[in-house]
Length: 218
Image (cartoon, rainbow, N blue to C red):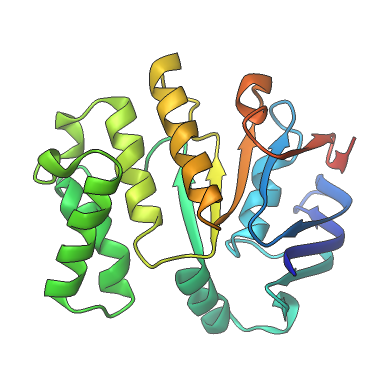
């Protein structure tokens, strides 16, 4: 079964700039795929579309069998919240909240009760090796630790698909290796992972690599 199916995907911005030019591929459920290419090639635009944060200008995107073009904004938000986890290069953690509160936040938006979301957040932080730092704020954590909090947060609502945009871009080599090991572990447990990177050493961790150049698959 395909987790992701895109066919002839295009994205043109006001002014005529075409970020994606007829991209077509599929990702099987449980696959680990790296999307690789230089800065400005369309990788992040593609990831935003896959994550239902943006709509394509043309072409077709089917997520777990659902034709996303037929869904309204509220339906897309619900699908994104229930099925997709995001990991960002800049972590995107709220600085005044503790690690526990940052991880629990997506569950609050999903309507999960306070005791359940706090318990799951603590469980996820333990899973990523930060159980003892649950009450620390992001400023009290290293870059690698912040990214692990970001991964725990991405897993909060038990997504089937994990999307990562340059997740090791701000990390040293040791932290990068730890984050990649965690992605591999999640993938081995059955999670579909799509990771965007410009680094060949990072893409080597994936089972398959898609290369993008100038908005098209190379």
